[in-house]
Amino acid sequence: MTTYAERDATLLVLGFKSYRDYLDSGIWKSIRNAVLTRSDGICSVCGSLSANQVHHRDYSETTLMGRNLSSLIPICSVCHHAAERDGKGRKQSLSVANRTINVLSETPKNPRRLCFTCRKNPTRKNKQLCGRCSRSAMQKHSEPSR
Image 1 (cartoon, rainbow, N blue to C red):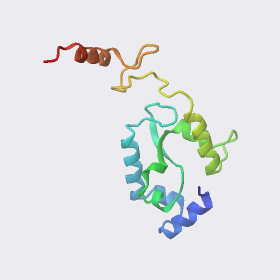
Image 2 (spheres, rainbow, N blue to C red):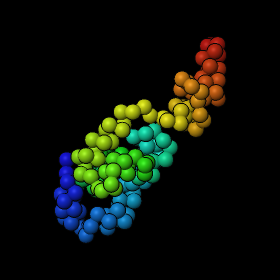
Image 3 (cartoon, rainbow, N blue to C red):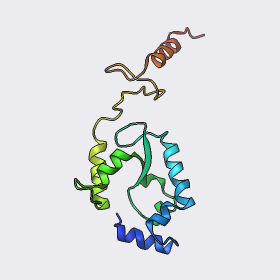
Image 4 (cartoon, one colour):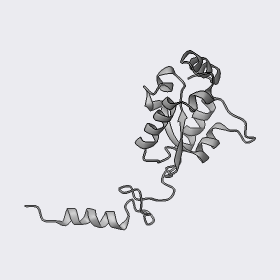
C-alpha cells in the first residue's frame, strides 16, 4: 500500500511534476480507457452502468505505468466520491478509501436489476434474465437435438 506522498515521489521519478500532470498525460488516458473498456462501463462497486472514473488501489510504478491493471478498478463518480472523501469533503487516505470500497462492494450489485446476459434490459423481481434473453435461452434448450 502506498501513500499519496509516496505516489508523488514515484511520479517525479517517472517524469511527472504532479499527479495532475499524470492524469492529463496520454499514458494515463490510455490506461483509463483500457480499464473502462474492460468493464463495459460497469462500476465495480455498485454495479451501475455509469463507471466513468478509475480508482487506483495502489500507486506502485507498475500500476501507474499500466503494467498492472488489476490494481485499477472502474468506478462511478458517486462511489468514488463516497470512498475518497469524508463527510466534510476532505480527501481520505488511500487505505481508508480502499476499505470503504471493500465495504461498499459487499452490498448487492446490479441496483437497476439489469439482465445478466445483455446488461441492457431490466428484469422482473427475483429474475436474472430479461424477457428477451430468457425466451432465447428457453428456445435453445427446447430445440430437439439431432
